[in-house]
Structure formats: structure tokens, C-alpha cells
Amino acid sequence: MTIKGLSRLQANEMPRILVVVLLFALPFAAIVSASWAVAIPVFLISVLIAFWWWRKDMAALKDRAASPEREARNWLVQVNGIDVGRISDARLAQLQLAAAKDPRCYLAQALTLIKAVVVTAGIVVLLAPAAAF
Image (tube, rainbow, N blue to C red; front, side, top):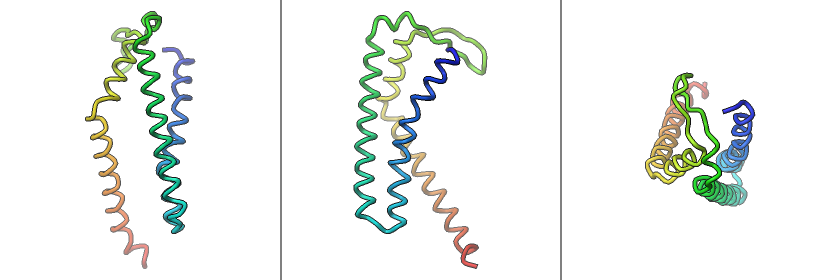
């Protein structure tokens, strides 16, 4: 992978960051301001945007995995900075598609989100008495 390819991959992550901000930050800001009339539509719109983006990503991965000209493009595979081989772009897309369709990934993400909420709530409970004084 070249530096040019790396910067292109990082640039492709920016819309996902925007979706995360829409999905979490804006509804919480609306809830804090006690405006449920704003929070609920913003949350629903952000969920629709996230779902649209996910479907767009799945379609792009399917196209890349089925594309015969993608077999000629190769990615360098490194483990801990050591070159271990090469993989075609089509095979990489197949692996990414398989990972995206695996429900265990979604379960792991949901559990991580729940854990973060529980840890944050625990910290708030511990710090609330200190903030009161």
C-alpha cells in the first residue's frame, strides 16, 4: 500500500465520523437541552443516514469482490511491520464483506457500547458527590 492509498482510505472514513456525530452527539445535545421534539427526529434521521451508508458500503464491497480487474491490484500484508505476503483487492473485499455480514461483529460492538455506557454511568455516580460539594 502506498502513502497515497493510505490517505485515500483515511479520507473515506470522514463520512463515517460525521454519521457517528449525528447518531450520538446531536441527540444527546438535544436531550440535555430538554427538547425531545428535536432529539427524536435528529436521532431517526441519523439512523436512516447510517443505514443508507451501510447499504452503500455493502454494495461497494460486493462490486469490488466480484470485479475481475480487481484481481490484478495487490495489497501488501504486514504483521508488526514485517511483510508477510500480498492479497488481491478482490480477495480483500471478500474478507471485508464476510466480516461485515458476521453477526458476531455486531454483537461485540453492542457489548462494547453497553460496557462504555455502564463505565461512564459508574464514573458519573462516583463523581456526582464530589461535584456537589
